[in-house]
Image (cartoon, rainbow, N blue to C red; front, side, top):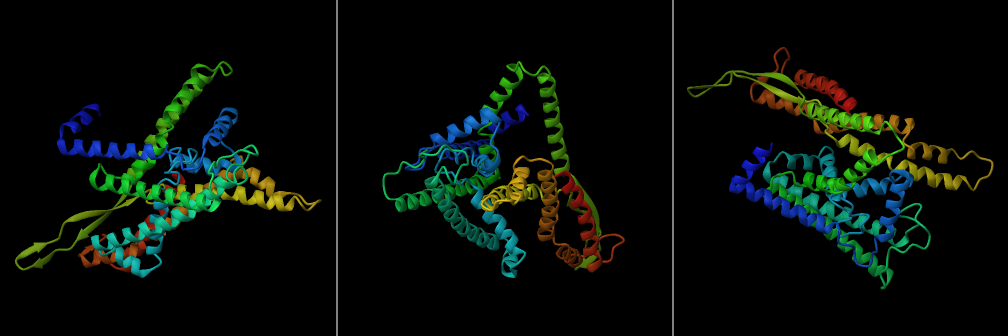
Length: 403
């Protein structure tokens, strides 16, 4: 691997792409540490550090904040310009993909090739701006009203906003800066995809998640080599490393796994030349939905605890009634059996939901028929579509169980 990396630096064009990508990633990390005007993030960072030292991480109502902060590379808790991260753009992209299955106009654009993709990209950028303004406004209000709205458990009287001007001006400037920050990240991701080594959005997310890796390695070192309470800590560390490698190997295997459907093309005469007659295959991925079901399920499960606590606060005013809402909220927040059962069920549901939207067996069957292809033993047309749907249903079950 090291020799391959060294050889890549010897190719001028590839070396330029690598350094260009690293420069843009550096800009993304700088923006994640520039605080918003009028915001002092010190109390938030001190609060989360104390929670991490005392309980090993954030709990309860702060799960949403910690999860979002992970994807922004710590920018959210830094009160930074890139506090919204790249998630608004990803949300807009997902919405546009889902709308393509609902609105025929968008579906036709998706099939028009490069001009259609450019149109959809433009619509995605506009939708990203709308989402940024909404989320930026909510974050600005949460920062202004902390500690009552942004973080549960923050001491009363803690001041995060130190802006001396009127409140409406702070809200306006914060929305403008946050929206601009997300649009800059969107542009950086697109530039990495076009002029860098590719997959710009994924690289931005990965670098943001890995930003806390040095601290995590230090904490792991302290836990293993400086712990005096647990005599089995070395054995547990070895098991953790082994489990980590096993999970990584499993992810790679299932991600690359595919069911190859044989396809035979009939011979056809065009002028004096004979075309077709060769055999090929149609690859159907086992994990067709990728990681999207996990993201959807995780995002949805963040909110029941908050909503149930609000309902529990309302029920607390009625004496003599069992506060079932608080008990259920604690069950979700503690991530016990109830949480994981619901989580697994949502992953299963969203796996089939994503495949039903993105996988088009009827269109694939029509394309095969137009090109003179057929699956041996299956009639062209509707029988081929039903066969592909049956196979993908079973593959999706295997992929969903793995997720």
